[in-house]
Image 1 (cartoon, rainbow, N blue to C red):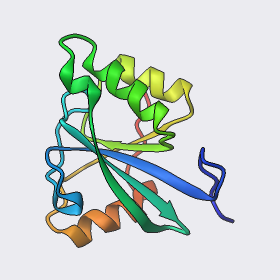
Image 2: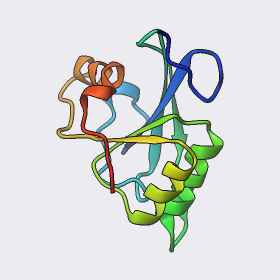
Image 3: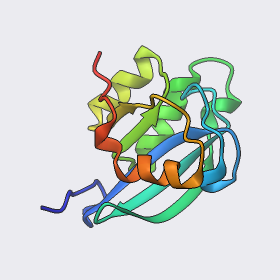
Length: 129
């Protein structure tokens, strides 16, 4: 069975907070709201189809950074977020918009490991508060 994302095309859109615009070579960011960028990955049939890096508008505000970041990801039609950590506000905002969240356990050491983590995100523990 093909999973259906918000785009309705059988594609799943995943967002990951990162520190640079270097695609799969980008170091992961520790926190959703404070990351400078999001790597947005479209998966089709379980494989990476397209990668984009977008600036995080939450990093430019002084308060409620995480809520601004969550709002941005919702506007980007993200289905899944992979993170090290996030606050309660962004968690509930994303959850109420049917975005699934999974905890990153370790930083990928190579582009291949990063791609593997994206393609196998359901192997990561789901974040439930």
